[in-house]
Structure formats: C-alpha cells, structure tokens
Length: 112
Length: 115
Image (cartoon, rainbow over all chains, first blue to last red; front, side, top):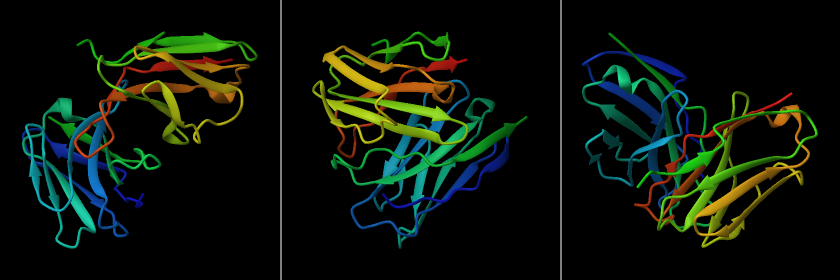
C-alpha cells in the first residue's frame, strides 16, 4: 500500500466546510483512496472511496487531484458530531494481501 | 441488522490469564477481520477470514494469540497467556467482499485491560 500523510489535527467551525487533506504521492495506478473516520469510543466508519474521479455521497465529497498524488475529503457543513479522527487509506481492492492499513489520521475538532 | 456485535465490551484480567473475545459478524458477510488499536501503534489488522477460513494472520503478534471462526456467525480471538502489553481495544469488522465497493463494518470494540 502507498503511504499516506495527513495533518495530525485540524479545527473547523460548526456549519462551515471541513477540508481534510491527504498526501499519497507514491500511489500506484490501481490503488484506490478510501476514507474512514472514528468517533471517540466507537469503531471506524466508512465514509467514501474513489480512484481518479471526484466522488460525492450523503456524507462527504472526495476530490482527487489529476496526478492522484493527493486528495481532499470535504464535509460540506460540519456538525459537532463530525468531531472524529479521519483516516485516509490507499489500497488495491481485491488483493488478499492488501487490506486496510490505518495510519495516524487527522483529528478533526468541530467547534461551536 | 444489528451490525457487528462484540462481547464483552470491557474486560479486565490479570497477567497470565486466558482471555477470549467474541464477535458476531453481519449476516451474509463472508469476510471477518480482527483489529487491535493502541495509542502507540494505532489501528492494526491482526487476522482476517474468508468463508470461515483464515486467509492472512501475519498481523498476529505472537503465538499467544489465536483466532477461530467455527461458523459464519461467530469468531473468537484468544490470548493465552495474557500480558499487560496486550491491553488495547480490539475491533472486529465484517464485509461482503474485499473489492472496491465493499466497505468494512466495524463493531463497537472490546476494551481489554491486563494488570
């Protein structure tokens, strides 16, 4: 799996967009970008994934740069319940030896 | 569905004792994963099963750890003998595949404290 780099922490005002960056400069052509988050005292929760096109679902948007070396997770209107650690993961799906590997993540604090 | 169920939620035991953690995956999911989370090492994959068969146990720290999946609806992670450094939160997760669109669903975790 390609290594990812994320800022250790970020703050965001409630109601504003939270933009969480992830650097994956060594990503290979068949690796996908996945985002999970972990709210305190809970198990990780899947958010979104993508290969090269931007993706959007009911939780968030994922913007992947054209060279695929970085991506940004966007929470359009952050709420206090979005306070969590956000993990960016790159992996090759359907590869038995390449399961989810969680790094340090970004601790997002949403403030009133 | 109730989601992934883990028991117990908290376990406190003394060094040297046997510890058994239990997991019930989401019905219909044929992949089951065991993770361990500590402050020092973050979230680590220990082992995963496909159709009740262990596929990759390279993350299991040592022989004191063992995992079984006797049927599609139950798995155990056993530590014998336990040591203080095994103190962590242990998560079980399940999914219906490992391809692109198959996300992993995590249980609430078991917080293990070994004194």
